[in-house]
Image (cartoon, rainbow, N blue to C red; front, top):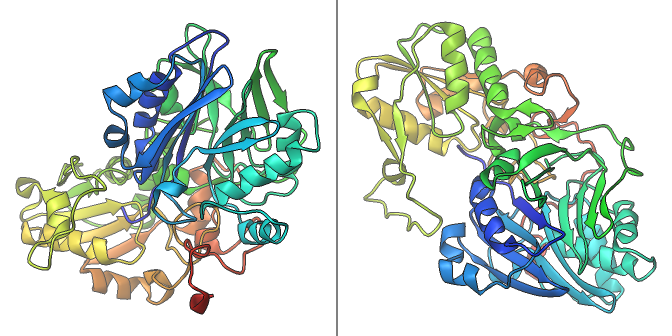
Length: 469
């Protein structure tokens, strides 16, 4: 695993008094894989908002005491973050809260605006003062500005969608409504379901619905605005089918949890398919197939079944290392602390090693060295994604080509650099098979962008010193 996580968003709406904060807590746990930088919950107690946000994982930020301190509320929005715009600090923790003359608003965002710099610059020149360096605050400002011109918050959101470009799945909470939005391309997933008592749940992935006992109803369509309020559930579709659907293909390769279903496609089955394709495109004589935990495991199983080579557990991940882990000095190997080999599985064997991606190549080389030290006689690496060749502007933390190893070296050169006997990538022309031939975004592999490309896309672009601009 070499790519940083996406964000996870979660919302609760009930027409009766409920335990919204507690439900959000368990929902965020189910979405922890999408972001481990920070997390937060905002609850709505009859129009009065209460929040708790901080840096860290869900279990670090929320204790039994912090959850108990929330009022008994029927509406809430929650977020777990890995930032692709803006640094790691408390100011950038979400959900973002806004107070204005037409009421409070709390906003959770998954994705990345491709026109964030242009929008923020225009707002600042008009007098806006920003308190964060994330593009989520830009969305909040635009919705707030439009809210002053129309009669409802959902009308303001619809008007804002005419201005926003790029990836944004949103859950927005007003004093009376919970509003969920998926951008017209549908880059990032968003779905909703209902609990047995009638409480509605909205989440980035279906795994979070199941975690709180909700039955999934469906995914939001690209461009859809879904409103939960006193009048029931309303779907607005004026932005639907304005753009071709472009679900991020990396949701299937890495971001989403394997037990999730995204736009009707099983993530586990998509990864199994990737492994099957690798076995067809890059066959090799070997004794065992192993995956790099966790996102390489499903593809490794697919490779094993398609090739007939036995599947085994050759690597074990230390699941107790979190973001507070202190990196060791030069005397200790960080990868050895995070991963361990099962020597009895790989010693003296020809190994097929399956992982989801190679970005810089450093981690792959370290894992291969571990397997060599455990006695593997050959190591043939297979990657369930094509080579990363282009920056992503929609939420994957690849903001430039500077550190992409595939931009500077051929496949044989990369194999030599990481110490593999052979190396095979998923062919870019077969990516569509993972999404069952549905239209998708694969710009980081092909360079074919669905939106205009921003001039400045660095993650810290709103934090740079004047000399760096």
